Image (cartoon, rainbow, N blue to C red; front, side, top):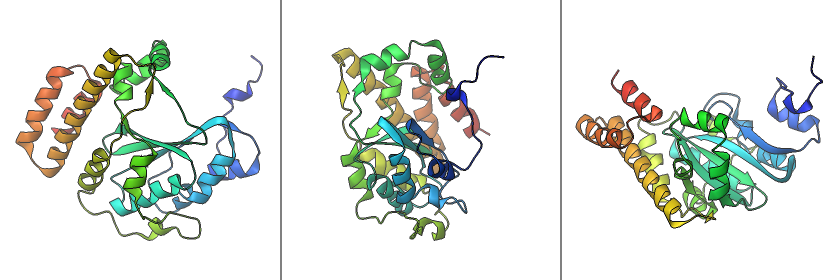
Length: 258
């Protein structure tokens, strides 16, 4: 039997209690609890919990928080973002799937190095994993950038944060119908420029083209949710001509036709 490697240890425990019980520090803490509208999970979306996670970061560490945008009202999403902004000086937002985003927080600025990302994506396991969800190039990955702290501050506005003693979203009303059609366009409209380092003009052009394809997908998706079938079919036909092998777009088309 090979020697025990603590880096491969898996602990099936409550994440918040795990951070409380130990002074261990981490390069990356990823958070994907149930949606904030689910009962009993609000304290995994609070400023208090984020401060605990921040205290357990190693130098230059990051916290990545899954942010669903269709399971609660837009006002509640703004409060969730405010909780994150109140905790981390450096915050960015990335698109991960039609119905969700990813907040990334850190104490230090994280350089987005296009050359380094391209080198890492040459690694077969990473390239395979990303390819399975439609990310087939560095440009595709970088096109999922949404905004930096300035855009998120405009989005959150004067929303009150979620805290342990004011778990406001736990008692919020049921999400309104078509809430995605409110939140997603609001976030898209606030997109900021991607702060790249070591990116040549060819790379920047490829990222812009990939982002335009992503925007077309968002447009098609919102048309589908609104019941505009002809517009949805038109947009997806254009997209599938450009990226016929994209597995995520193919899945979306097949699921929408059921």
